[in-house]
Length: 428
Image (cartoon, rainbow, N blue to C red; front, side, top):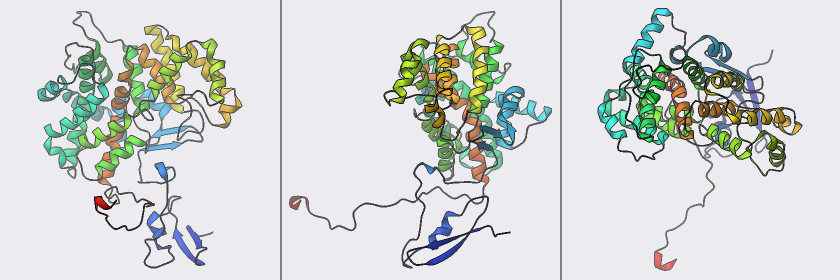
């Protein structure tokens, strides 16, 4: 049996190098020895967007994009979505195992104890303009929370880290709900810890003083499952930002503000907004063939299809499609669903899309569900952030505890001018 090494021959010099292979990867620093001149820096890899570069070792989330597999700590996403709940999944992601009954109840109690936010933060949120984007408010609130919990900077202390995890999971829905209420000019509703995590969030959004008000359990369950499906997705853009900022030993609020800012981008968390706008532009199921042809001619961009990781059907999209009909049973059908189904049918039966692995992803149906539940489009990314929070915290916590991790500092390939002498302005 062969050795777990690569032999690399430098054709410039004819010299060969033996490079160890571990977990199907090589250590990038091992390439530094490959050089023509001893004074050179050595060989680097060039990988824009980190398409084939592992920045960490992780035990949190496993993805097989070719087979459409997503697992949290080894558990298939399908099982967790059907049988678990969001706070239990959050515990699993952060601490590595599903909690037993007593631990789970204590965990839920502790998270609910931290749902109230500091009054200074509430007053700060009221300083935003009436038309401020709620995602901008969420990012700002996270940064402010860093100033309110100064002990959070002691990230090496596990007890301190655990306290901030509880605070973030507890307070983030409150911040999101307060941002929403401020956006529509209504007074805020303070948290109700008698309710479940998603019930409490919907209550803070919608309660208008009715004596007989109750949160619809179908909508609460649907939102809970959506949170689970969004909870983590390996080293995506925002998770890698969370790790990168955390590598400087910044507190988790500052790191999460950066992660949320990354999620805010339309190429990441804003994709489901783009799907809704696309479906609204198409207008009716009858016009789908016309737009499919426009996609083939590169005249129209298809949103919600294809994924950087998945080369087959996104497993989360299958689950979300089912949730959509549960929600429509309460809210009534969303007219966009007919367009979406027709578009999916056309894409899955057309070689143009099949050859390019353009299958529906998680964003294709989630925006339709949020719209049916009454969320304005500028709240879609906020909801995504609530679901992704435990994944960010799990990635951050793992990075802090990893002895191999150092402060993030990518290299570059410098292509600028060589040394030049300064010329006084009158001589230029």
